[in-house]
Length: 225
Image (cartoon, rainbow, N blue to C red; front, side, top):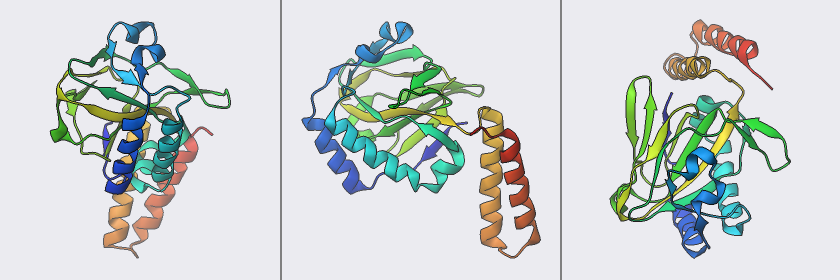
């Protein structure tokens, strides 16, 4: 399930974020790559200890915490602090799969169920640099407006195509969902969207309460906390 989350950040937040990113010191992105990724990763990344990254990451997490579409699609249990990368001309990230486990700041291990990319560069600022995600229905090419985000299963093979003009700035991070299984998570998301639509059109319809009960019973059945 690929879900685009529009307007995670306001235009003002994007401008402030870009100013922080432009002034920050960057390092070779391969410093955080695993054995697989090191062979195909050509980009730059903010160091883990970057103050600019910490500040901007807090802004992103606060925005996501109040984003109903994100909460419905991801059902997050643990979210890693966002990290940041940039791609200039000739830089790319070849086919890879994200590592299954990461460590939270407190040292707790978490499973990566969903990967997230939040764009800081507008599509017309660079050529190439598409995020290409392979799923059961084929390859999907993603290049969203600044401030928008894509959420997709971390089990997917994906890549960033070479940038041929301009520069691509983005944030990327992972989360563990309360729902481990992608199909179950997609089912709950579709049901939640349908319940909200029915509730808006027919707020007193008895099926709203009934379907809401089914949703929460499935969440109890499948959920991990």
